Image (tube, rainbow, N blue to C red; front, side, top):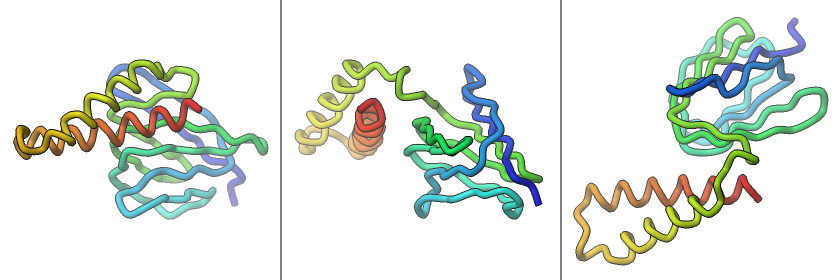
Length: 134
């Protein structure tokens, strides 16, 4: 039985993380997905949310804005649309994105369906980033 998992988080622009971890939790489409050593093989989509992982008793968090995860032979590969550590989050930018999204959602009568869907997703991302940065 393995005692750790190799976790790799990659975005289109960079390798965010590559570490051996004890366990992790990722935002799945139906809720949180917990991964422990010797987890069954799995391929899934990921939602907007926090990927948390534990290494030597210390908990760490990365924000994800969706993507995919593969679990195979104690290797978890996350292909994320975007991913950030809490110290990388620009809170002023996230606050501006939140305000823009809220204005669009408040003015529903003048926005088309596509703009409303985009605003809802932008609001979810902004709130996640602000929560994680705290």
